[in-house]
Image 1 (cartoon, helix red, strand yellow):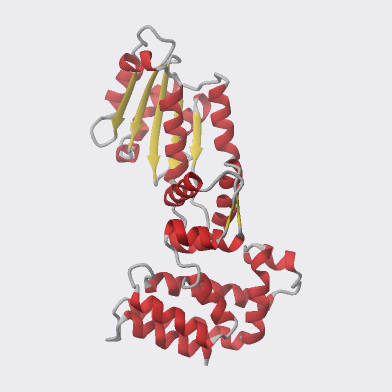
Image 2 (tube, rainbow, N blue to C red; image 1 turned 45 degrees about the horizontal axis):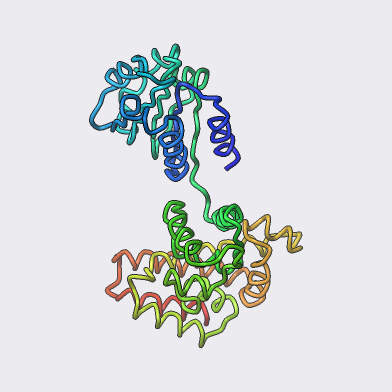
Length: 333
């Protein structure tokens, strides 16, 4: 986020570069920077003649360069934004000649999603020298909670750790989806609200009592009754609670627990750092480790692998609900 802020601040201060090559696995920041350029550089009266949006599937590098070499009309700059530029990956090396000596009055933006330039290539070095090369990396799941907290802080909201975890477990690591849901929350809740699980349930539709976070906690506590209530709810609402997601999250939990058993320093700060979790959740691992010794954890990871295979229809003729019930029974007993 610091790099994104620096790029945006530079643009606000008029420190413009002739090329912005925005690449990487996470499209959220690529779109954010590109949209900011699209909405900021030119005023409305200048955009008609001097702002152009192209799509990688419809144009060639030669056509982009030809447009980029033109001078603006009655404006200081022209802006050319190439969306879905990854469709030009086979010919992107041809950009090197232009990138070496770009037209200074043109702001050329490439939205090169889900891919990145090879650092060894001349085109990479040319763009890096004359323009901005930004790689938008996918966040790991254990980083998304902190990202949510920072985004909401910028909007003058705070969020309880459980509420943030509910969003992560329901929406995964897709920052665009999460951002949309955060916008929903901040549009209906007054500024300075401390967002809690009730707000998530009421405004986004994620159950605060029947979700993977609560299942994981119930399993860690060996709370058989609560675990069975949750999986019965999942069975009745399979679209909102896909088995593959539940297995994945339980697998992450028990893999982290295996790591916990191997730690020499079991202080809260050390555990949080080693497992990549908020200190708020460390007590859950301490409790679960008491209930599940290392040998049992290893056995459970094998149960989870078997369930994952079965969920994909291999070697079993069971419903998704039956696979989950069998898995939870094996874990708890």
